[in-house]
Image (cartoon, rainbow, N blue to C red; front, side, top):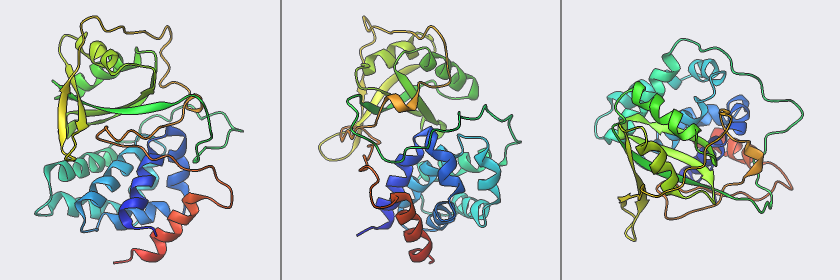
Length: 269
């Protein structure tokens, strides 16, 4: 039985994959459903919804559609002024709002046609994982750009997204890439340093120092925006602050269609 948190969590995990973001925004049910979730009373649902919107806004062509979606900007404004919410929620709502209000950016090159976005993970032997880093010194767009440059140089980094308010960066990497390599690359900036965010046995987030001395950092000879997404598939890692959910390969219908139907038919509060 689906509930609000499970639906929005799976949408968030799908949205973390760059090749899925355009399809989610264009779907007639998902974006309106996410707007509805912005009025939910559960902090967990609110935060996961804002994370999803933050991922979707990473693709600049999505921004006009998101901004013009009925109720989107009003709901974000309400969250920013709503009493009793955590700083993480209000700050992330402000970040999403500011991104949607920014002037249009130049369009990025289109993804080659003929390759359908993959919402369902096949049985590939190659795996990927996500790690969440707390980055000391991540205080401005200048430091963010410095961190981006450092991560892009590391061979094995697939994608990453920032939460500036909490000084965090969620990085998707190949499973054979040590987390210490990320910390070493960031420490090489001489300005920033990174610790890993994990959950302890009680489910509370803790910061784990990472050894940077002697850590090997394999660098890309060329610097594409991201490594090819089809070379890896995410794996669930319960020790991470942001866990990933794998989905079964599509057989009798799309999970996305099921979720969209659930969103539009159930959550009209």
